[in-house]
Amino acid sequence: MNKHIALQIRMPRMKLTVLCVAVLLLMLAALPQVEAAEVLNGVKARGQLRCGVSEDIPGFSERDANGRWRGLEVDFCRAVAAAVLNDPEKVEFVPLQTTTRFPALQTRRIDLLLANATWTLTREAVLKVRFPGILFYDGQGFMVAAAARIATLADLDGATICVERGTTHQRNLEDYFKANGRSVKPLLMASVQQAATALFAGQCQAYTSDSGALAAMRLRAPGDPGSFVILPERISREPLSPVVWGNDPEWATVIRWVLNILILGEEYGVTRDRLDAEIEENRNPLLRRNPYEGEMIARSMGIEPQWGIRALRAVGNYGEVFERNVGRNSPLKIERGLNRLWMHGGLHYSPPID
Image (cartoon, rainbow, N blue to C red; front, side):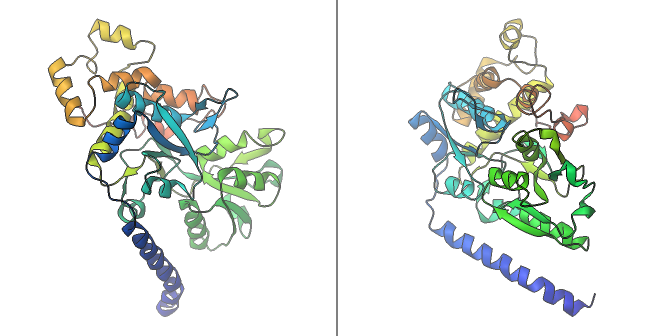
């Protein structure tokens, strides 16, 4: 392709990116500043964690028949509440659409965001937020009607594809098909539910999102969930992480290490059912610590000692949380894949405590 033509093609996109960044920076200038440990101290003073979660996605964040919140994101919020407030039930769950999740964090409506948020440089640098660690490794996939006999992404050339507005998926979708010499017609939707419903109603030929979200929404398909299939191809890496406000490193440290202790719990074989027995036996290296040393670390973090034990007692280790909500013990039956521990061929790996 002629270099001058290629430059002309890229210029509109470059201008749009610069404009978006400029708008975001203006928004940030008007937001309240956060002092060190302000979020952590606010949570403790309030006696409640305000946790932003996905809006009604099975396995990740949904209310059961009794109105109780359940899911992978929900369990992590409860682990944080147990560690910080000594009570996993001291959580206010705030369901958020994709377009409102980051503003809710920036305006201090919530203390912690868990809403299928992908860790990206743009979000970290421009929005001034932090991603303490990866809770769920995912990738962008595509769900189609089984009757359509669509086998590969090449079969979607020229198709209308449902995608949520304000996500990384929209840009990935357009980039992938353009790079492969094909085109698609994105149909922008405000939420996961609207996008899935549009697919089920035949308004689009495919719905693209994180593969975990696709598996969750397939359960909502009218009639037989098997009438819709998720194509095997993935067009992106989607490391989904808890998100916190960027100017409170103490709070980010707490969130990071609650996640790490759940991972370490699985690595050292500490389960929720066996936790008290393991403590009494005093042989497990993860639990056998000098009381003074443990107190010193906890005080330095700004929380009470035995925070890790409280988190594990509340929800179990990472493997238990995964399998219960989205894995083999759940309706989603998602294979762990990259979400296995590092010694089992996955990517989950915690730095050492010492």
